[in-house]
Image (cartoon, rainbow, N blue to C red; front, side, top):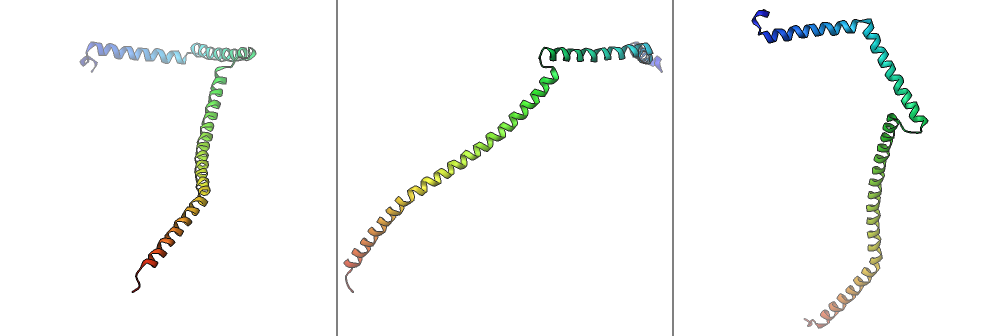
Length: 134
C-alpha cells in the first residue's frame, strides 16, 4: 500500500511518525518532565519575586493595572448612566419651566379674552339695535 504512494508522501508520513514517537518518549521521560516542572516552578517564583519587587518600589504590577482598568471601566459605565439620568431630568425641568411660563401668561390671556368678549357683546348689541323691527 505504501508502494503506491509517491516518495515525498512516504517520507512525510515516516517523518511524522518518527517525530510523534520522539515527542511521546520525551513526554514520558522522567528527566524531561522533571525539567519542565522545574522550569515552570522557577517561572512562577520569578513572577512572584517580580511582583514583590514592584510592590517594594511602590509600582503597580500587571494584575494591579488590570484590576484598576476594570474599576475605571465600571466607574465610567456608572457615570454614563448618571449622565443619562441628568439629561432626562434636564428635559423634564425644561418642560416644567415651559409650563410655568404658560401659566404666568394665563392671566394676560384671560384679560385679553375678556376684552374680546366685551367687544363682541358691544358688536352684538349694536347689531341688535340696528335691526329693523319686523
